[in-house]
Image (cartoon, rainbow, N blue to C red; front, side, top):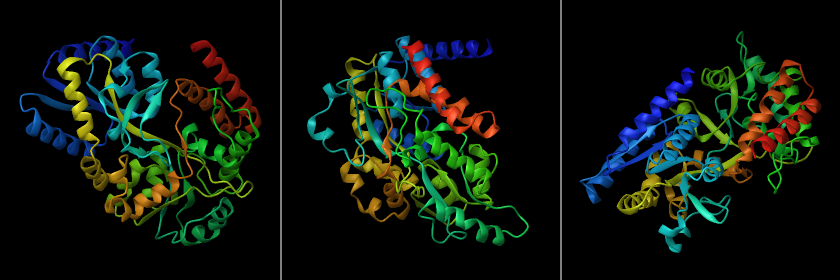
Length: 405
């Protein structure tokens, strides 16, 4: 009840604040340092082009961002532009709260975005629904160069680091690796390392496979048999272990890079180690982060929102964010710039991105995540074997998709 009341109050606030016709709002989940730059960029756009309009940004965490946007847009309101991950596209299209962008942009502009190792812009059911300002957003192996001068290339090399790193830790416990391994998103790369994936070309879950079982068994063994990762490690705990030097390496994404460099850590970035048994690299999910247009936009407000979208995705603005955060830009010109080429961290992140797999944008993905989590986590509490968990994930995913569709 408390959550429902909160949502209703927020919805009323959206309806009230969005009546200012000469205001363009962007909702997003950028970090504070990026918000500051976003505000500066919006002020520049206002000064140069539309001094009598207001341009503002508002932060929400990822789950709130999607939920609150849907509430507002269904009520005929909400922000002009939504900046979010590509997996928002399917659910938002199904609910008809974002509109196709291709009628408002030309072919020359669209051709200026990268298409390898992933397509920057998101087309879905024959229409363009998201224009990217950065790409990747993928998991990498991040290592402390002071502890691991040369990162492991394979899982066997990773396990072999235990003896040396334990000896150099003195009286303090130190782990070879840590990461949020209890979450399915952080588990999926290892499924790819065994040749598996979360769904097929028809958007049907593919969880009850040998690849899922072997990937889960590997992580279980890293935790229990080889003891190179902690027994428990949610996102914040894993992050702190790495920052404090109690873990030599972590699997995390580009959003975390500046956290470590700001902490004066001497870090390197590389691929998650290769699976010895298959000779395959783990395949982290790769995705664009981009802008979508509110379905309620029309007239002058729509025209200005599209112009702002093009401004925010210009090579010059993208590179400002690249210099600040190490994000991989989506425009070909920016991607090929010296700023990107000469940045070791960005180049290493691109090296990992090359073996990733694009994020599915269909709504089924949301239900697959929900189905995977309890069964997968039951492996580490001893309530399920990897084989049992794989079967249960599949059963639950099929059930959720059937019920919701």
